[in-house]
Length: 68
Image (cartoon, rainbow, N blue to C red; front, side, top):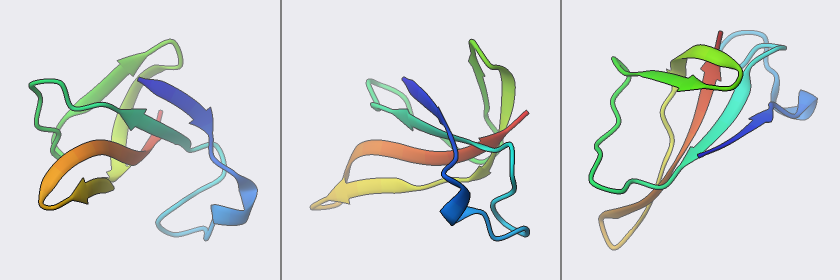
């Protein structure tokens, strides 16, 4: 898992807010849903936007927007 502060150019004030984090996770035997929480060094984060990179239908990684 990699956690980054969200780039201010992505902030739209509605779906993505200042202070949100971009979280990238490799899906090793895990299926992530919006109901899940992310626990990391930034604390326990809620998934605000679940992004998925899927080549050929199989998830290669999750690229999520999370907030604490």
